[in-house]
Image (cartoon, rainbow, N blue to C red):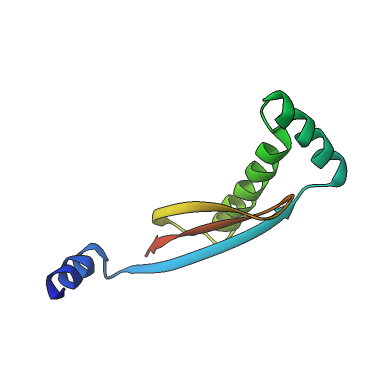
Length: 95
């Protein structure tokens, strides 16, 4: 157990700072109807794709405005309810 903790601590650099940004987006009623139709036909769900891309673009814009330089990062996308998603960006900022 102590060995694992030592190895974990070696992975974290001293001059880093954790950062998290969360965006929540939702579709409108018309796009919801179109997506259901596309899903029945096995087509790409373009409304979802655009919604995800919009959220990622908002996060990238925020990082650029705050002049954040990331060491490593991840995006996590979760469905909150029918037609709404949360995009969580987390990682470590290099100083």
